[in-house]
Length: 74
Ligand SMILES: Cc1cc2nc3c(=O)[nH]c(=O)nc-3n(C[C@H](O)[C@H](O)[C@H](O)COP(=O)(O)OP(=O)(O)OC[C@H]3O[C@@H](n4cnc5c(N)ncnc54)[C@H](O)[C@@H]3O)c2cc1C
Image: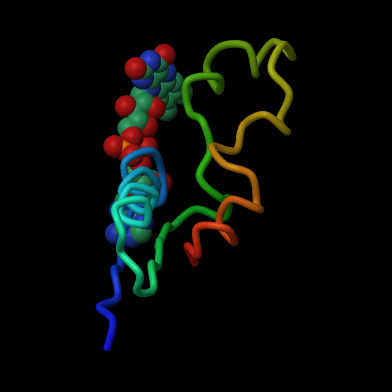
């Protein structure tokens, strides 16, 4: 049975851990658990360009939806 990796905290660190584990050869399930209603998103723009309309909401996600499928990250 392949080991499952469960990561609590779906932001920069958690997402990078998930991606790095997959890229390093982890072949079992990877489950990324967050407590926010959004997929992992960039935080710095929230207090900068996003407030003034210079940073579109569509650019906030750290990764595209396709990324999670390609990397098999749930
Ligand atoms: C508005 C804003 C502007 C910023 N600007 C800058 C900047 O200009 N430059 C800079 O270097 N840094 C900036 N930062 C800081 C930067 O965003 C953080 O350093 C970075 O987000 C840390 O990433 P992280 O993955 O370690 O933690 P976090 O981004 O804090 O992610 C932790 C995640 O874990 C989740 N979580 C926690 N406990 C649980 C639980 N029990 N169960 C499930 N989920 C849980 C949280 O909801 C969160 O989504 C900014 C932050 C904010 C909020």
